Image (cartoon, rainbow, N blue to C red; front, side, top):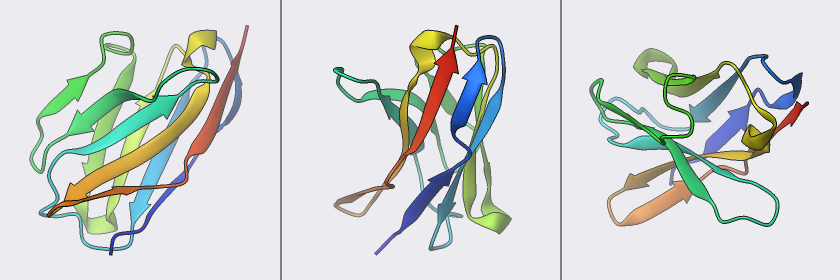
Length: 115
């Protein structure tokens, strides 16, 4: 069992920044492809950023050069630094990881960007 808890969401003005955290209940040292996803109202969930067990990262085109995903294995935490936020970034942000055959998700944290 892996429990993921997201935090750091909130209300921010366009152009502002937020840092999201995803704390895992287990060691993430060997966990590959931990990711951040988001779901805006009325839209499907989409991938935002994924980080390998090393340092390889992949970003959605819409957030590239604005968002940075990172991981701190000592703290069992994955981060999403979000800069230059836009109203279209408003969504519930979720953390996820696949361990074995099972996919784990957190409950999400709401990010609201006002114009």
